Length: 223
Image (cartoon, rainbow, N blue to C red; front, side, top):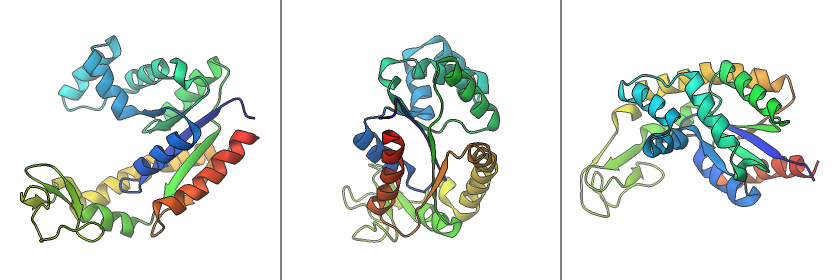
């Protein structure tokens, strides 16, 4: 058996990364380390790094690499991450990837697999652009995949459904463009070491996508 399964999960907004992360955690017992969750937790706990991050978040600025890297370093040192981990939302840049390599090397560890959930852009636009939220209870719908019984009305509370401002097509395509510009260098960086596996998302069900993900990670686990 492999000593560790250290996985990075990449996927554009709307690719279904969250669903796959849940299945990976359940199947392989890895802690799901989400940068966003860690930042919110660190801020809530009032840790030194959390307070540092809060200053930037309150100002509407990106949290600097050194703060994010410090938070990830602390999280990876916790006991549950010793047998392996699933990183989600980190690294986002080449600088962060190199910092991750350095911190893992210091601990005698390395990234073992990078899984990229690959979905065509037009389908991502359709997925994200079709999302609707209830103004009253915040329940989510989709005009194609999960429509309400009555158009524009929440099934649960009767509230008005609306489209988030960041789910319109122009904004979605911009978000996807930013993702591509950030992720392409990362994919190249890890591909040079033979670590990247692209798994087709698209029209396939979450179970079909996970079957491919599971096959790859199971092979890594047993190698």
